[in-house]
Length: 249
Ligand SMILES: NC(=O)c1ccc[n+]([C@@H]2O[C@H](COP(=O)([O-])OP(=O)(O)OC[C@H]3O[C@@H](n4cnc5c(N)ncnc54)[C@H](O)[C@@H]3O)[C@@H](O)[C@H]2O)c1
Image 1 (tube, rainbow, N blue to C red):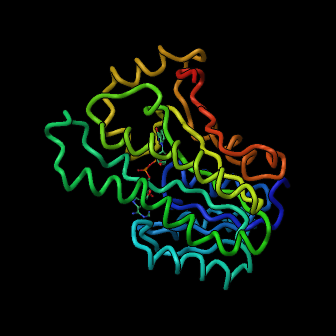
Image 2: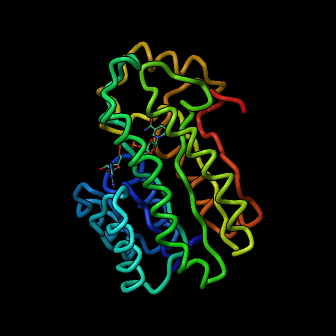
Image 3: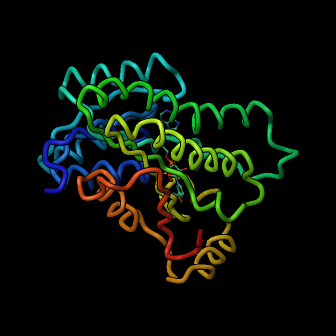
């Protein structure tokens, strides 16, 4: 039980990889807060099925009031915030198209969720982590930033921002005992994102890897648990690419 009684918030925890993160930390003894715009109750049931405590908070990470309420409700229920997993993003639902065809409003919305969301959530949990003298913020980036991927420029640009945000926030928060790291997964079929990825793209992803097979959510959760746990206490400001060796940086 590497996360016994730690309180872990997972944004975008209702579905996809976020749901897998919630289950993985619960299996290690954590209390989990599922924060999502989508219905988090099915994820909650699964987490409780493991014998763990959980809470659902309806939260749009791009809205400051929602993120402040997320922190308040977490503290009211569990009394502390040990880990924030900044996983929510506009991703699977985005249409792949040339940059000239991306509506400007869509660009703005991607930045609002994928970047302002991290900023707002980090600000919301900071007072509690500061008072505790310790905390972990884990941001979810993407291998697409390191590769450069066409027809997805708002998404890949936002994920580059996640890497910069991670490095800069880690420099600011080290003196408070707060570690800030990122994980950059490779393409991992997780439901929504499968509709937008052509077969040729999937095959190319696998071909470019040192370990030539499709990635599954279970490939990423080990790194997530490690970064959430005390085992990684002297690691901060880093981005760990978890993609079977598709990207070297
Ligand atoms: N699956 C992959 O191949 C892959 C690869 C690299 C990085 N990632 C990153 O991992 C994370 C999860 O990916 P996924 O495949 O599970 O994505 P997904 O699109 O299936 O799930 C994203 C989740 O975030 C939630 N969400 C969206 N907007 C929100 C908002 N404004 N406020 C709160 N919640 C919101 C959605 O409801 C959903 O539950 C994302 O940050 C994504 O960019 C995924």
